[in-house]
Length: 203
Image 1 (spheres, rainbow, N blue to C red):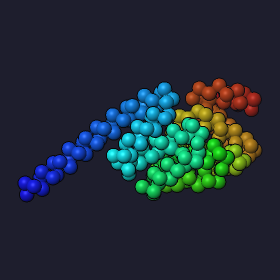
Image 2 (cartoon, rainbow, N blue to C red):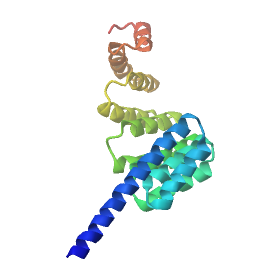
Image 3 (cartoon, rainbow, N blue to C red):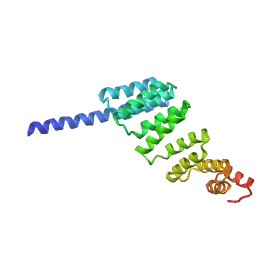
Image 4 (cartoon, rainbow, N blue to C red):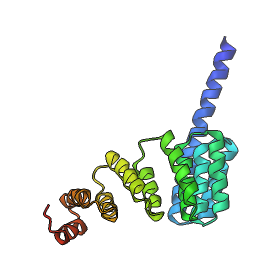
């Protein structure tokens, strides 16, 4: 019994020591990123992975840095490694979606964003990003739907109301366009106020 307690105590101390070490590396990483010293930041993440090869956050962190360096091949590799450790990791899918979007691979990006939403339906930014892609491929109805999902989570996003209004105008739905411009105008958007004036409307 004493031996079991001793082993459990040793394991507990080891966990605390590892957590403290990770926190220390994360502080250094933040400092290196502020300096845009990406090589040193990656080295710190690699140190974390040497201690804990299954650290999903470290894999995602390296992937984000490689994207900043425009190395999408390595970036994708680390996001996929993160997914291999946790198949429904919302952040990994979101970041893969960002990569594919920046590469102009919109079908793949939408697929990744949808998987991110399945893993975490509460992230307004993912709906917004997906809406942007739909707008780029001229699927305005899908863009509006995605932006509205984002607004349901973050209803004070003035820019999204303006975008929703813009795409309603593209669909010749003036009534809903005015409705959304009015919401944006009430939140202080000068762009929306100008558009409403053009349409002969008030707010």
